[in-house]
Amino acid sequence: MKGQARGLPALDAVDDVAAVEVEAAEGGGGQDGLVALIADEDDAAVAAGQIGVAVLAVGVQAPLEDVAIDHGRSGNQAVAAALLYGADVDQEVAEPRGFVGFGGGEAVDFRRRLGEQLFHRRQRRLPFHEDSHTHWSQPLASGRGKKMLFRQIIHEDLGCASYLVADREHGVAAVVDPQWDIDPYRRLARLHGVRIGHVLETHNHADHVSGHGRLCRSTGATIHVHELAEAEHPHEPFGDGWKLELGDLTIAAIHTPGHRPEHTCFLLSDAGRGGAPWALLTGDSLFIGDVARPDLAVEPREGAADMFRSLRDRLLVLPDEVEVWPGHLGGSLCGGSGLDLKTSSTIGFERRHNRALAIEDEAEFIEAQVGSLGDKPPNIERIVGLNKGPLVEDFGTPAPLSPHEVEELVEAGAAVIDGRTNEQFDEAHIEGALSASSYDTGFATKVSRVAPPGADIVVVAASSGDERAAAQLLASVGLPVRGFLEGGMTAWRTEERPVRRIELIDPDELARRVDGDAGPVVLDVRNKSEYAGEHIPGSLHIPYGDLAGRLDELPADRQIATICRGGKRSGLAASILQRAGFEVVHVGRGVGVWRDGGHPVERGAAEPVVS
Ligand SMILES: [Fe+2]
Image 1 (cartoon, rainbow, N blue to C red):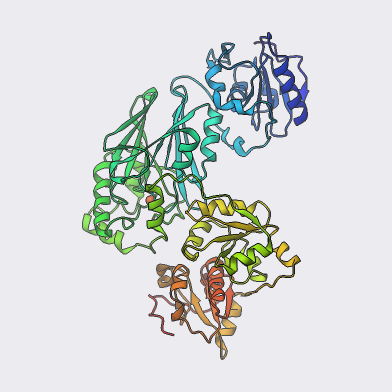
Image 2 (cartoon, rainbow, N blue to C red):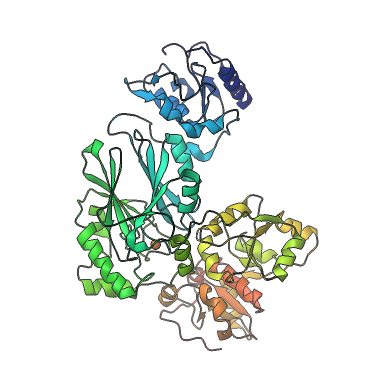
């Protein structure tokens, strides 16, 4: 291959790249070089060789001068990336030209790397700047010990983590605890030339709908879950000690009941690196800084006792250096308040610093776990049912709706979820809409706590495209979206349809108002422990998720000022109250700002609310 990159023109436009790609494909027969078109982040491209097969990579982060097919070191990543990412192959891949060597004497198996899943890119202009370029951070080196693929995929809104693992030489990947949006797994598999053959579940999730049904449809993968999960969909049940081998990679099941009876951790070992266990996918058992809640499937004390034994007898017996990769990160409703935002840890670090693991006495552990339980997540039975039952592949595509159609749906009982910021909502919104900003984490969880059960959902977003993203988030917690207001509030207002407003005030203004006669009733909508820690004297307390069911505890003849920590839950609560006919005012900043402004606070649990 040496020298073939020289003399070829540098290309500087996407059209040029596409043209060369086609030309190379058409004129390729009989030539024996390789054309690798490597595009950098600025869409510039360079032809690096030729073979009658055009290979195109996008988003490669290597500098152009390093990209040369006869360059044995830093060019490897880009060129191998080109092979893995996409190809326009007029030559049958079934008849590969053999092996293409890139540096270090390592051979890349051309046929398998190009793989059948790359065929669909033929005759198509490849999109540049797909966000897939974020996955190029690790060199695609080959060779024993460097063929393991391990990726953590984080669902920021729900605080869930899932994993794709593979031995790339073996060419088959497993996905653990897939989220509803399966695009990240498919993209990773495409990028690395592996096929997703297995889906493993640590347990029946209660907080999000698994993507296992969609992955099965898309890839034909087999689902594996513990026999106690009693899954009704096609799957291969396993028990404690079950092993799945993917080339050098072994995934071993460690049954760890507690969060749920079927819960299982997966221990990874790599024969290419000594064969000792190196990582533990802990699902909803051991988290970073805390442990999973025990009350979602069984009686809380029973779950906590199981959790204690699982942690002590099955996980803490592992060596200190074993990495811990959890199923949830800080912000998730499946963990306690000690849950860290970090994405991984080790057994040794957690042994020393995890507050739940510091409790060595079982009875004490159970008391601590049960005593610190937060509000139970919403819809858990329904979501578990979706995850255990027949495979869910789709919730339907949200339809673009005109203002008239939205109005008709609302009249028929649909709920409008306004995903703009709470402040935008306050300025003008559709009557009866609920305010939950889809630009903040926890959007889907918030909506699932307050959406009227069974009602059709219509989404309003700030800008085009955001409504589909919001609908995708809602689908991930099992809430199908019927449609969205096309053109957003601009379309609504252009037709001069009526809007409602909510007054937005800050804590200083609230202080002035509660001082006077006929001031508002202050309603704190944070959770129990937040309220007990610090609250405005005399304020009522109802968590926003409980509000719709406890409206009769509020005075109907008084204005109600909602407050929380940062103004988001209070915005949602204000919209719930306005929808129910209350006169409301939204305090846009929280109890902490109230305190910092010199206004009084007190500690202690809430008195029962009496209207
Ligand atoms: Fe869970």
